[in-house]
Amino acid sequence: MRGNNSMKFSLVTEKPTNHKGFGGNVPELSVVVPIYNEVESLPQLLEALASSLSNCQFSYEIICVDDGSTDGSAQFLQQQTLIRSDLRVVILRRNYGQSAAMAAGFNYARGRFIVTMDGDLQNDPADIPMLVSKLEEGYDLVSGWRKNRQDAKLTRLLPSKIANWLIGLVTGVKLHDYGCSLKAYRAELAADMNLYGELHRFLPALAFIEGARITEIPVRHHPRRYGQSKYGLGRTFRVLMDLFTIYFMKRFLTRPMHVFGFFGMVSMILGTALGVYLTFVKLGLGEKIGHRPLLILAVLLLLTGVQLFSFGLMAELLMRTYHESQRRPIYRVREVFEPKVKSEG
Ligand code: UDP
Ligand code: MG
Image 1 (cartoon, protein in one colour):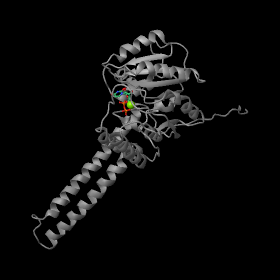
Image 2 (cartoon, rainbow, N blue to C red):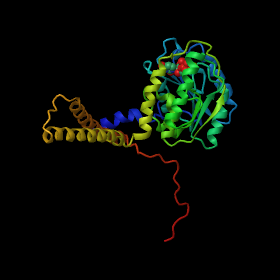
Image 3 (cartoon, helix red, strand yellow):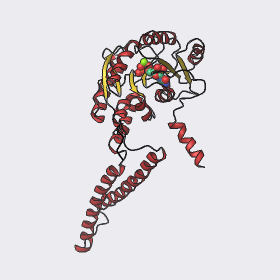
């Protein structure tokens, strides 16, 4: 039983670094590219990556994660592994979305630095060395900032401006451009961040929750040459929803009772006060209270209070399960220094 359980968890958290077929020397830099129906871009993408990275001081690998493409991207990538030594390809069974594809890439990445970028040639591989050298200065995450973003103004740039402002406000991480996929991470940080839904847009915020040192630098951006964007205006709404999640995670992940309990308590106190007042009216003054809206309010407040309170308790239990089942401590260590001299005696 126990064995079974730990298997399940290991599916989520294990780093399959010694996965079959991925032998060879361990590179220093892994470039993770999620690919969903980008077959026309792929030849140029691989070329551009190789030419920018082969001049760079690091040994590198390109990890293309095919996210259930139906246009032959997977087949093309697979063929390329026959002739390229710098390419590893992970093919997902179906389309899971960009976050999942990136999470898969993080899991298979072996480098101590990880760079993510889009597979549609909108990001420029020539910027990668600059991002990585910033990491070397001591940052944990370097985010690209598309200063001259080449996307539709009204449907893309405006919502994105608002979203960036909102995300900055809510998360406390001030970046100009959260949506830029071109980012560089230290591998330890990438391993600490669990991606769900479409949370890849909030990676800097998640990184901030993990205590990362974050910075941004301007990067180039090109219009999409082939294929079409996988997202439309609908994502604005999803970003908003995700923002709530992130806010909650940032503030209350390890102490949910503080938020639910607080509102539950306020609600119960108000309900009780109203109840006491109504009891006084009924018993002390001898008036009827059955027809009073206040009575309904008192009952509603009391019930809501009890519900919120018990929900807070449940959330506390869930939080403990979350941390303990994954052996996930509630803190992150940056470095540990042990004594370098032997103690005497
Ligand atoms: N992508 C993916 N799975 C999806 C949607 C997108 O792997 O379900 C990839 C896509 O192939 C591209 C990157 O994520 O490499 C960004 O997508 P897109 O260029 O459509 O987003 P935009 O640049 O328009 O924000
Ligand atoms: Mg794009």
